Length: 120
Image (cartoon, rainbow, N blue to C red; front, side, top):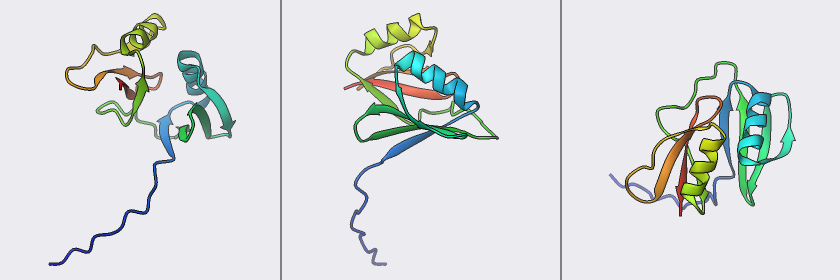
């Protein structure tokens, strides 16, 4: 059986869409905890500014179930332990530091979604 190799034509992932149970509550939490700036918002979604060429969107969905069995993406930080300590001060639920490379820990957002934080 000959498999034809397809040339890659996708340049990058443009945005991450994170499901949330309440858009306004989630937006406030991400702004207060991380300082993300609001770019746009409608009744169901909003876009937050994290870095150039990195879309981060919160999407309110009616049958919301938290992503709590794996982390769908990582935030990259320069000083992992400093960030972890700041999150603890803000009463964010965080894991211990994980074994292996890269250095990392997980956090749980206001919706119960797990997100990894890594140091590169």
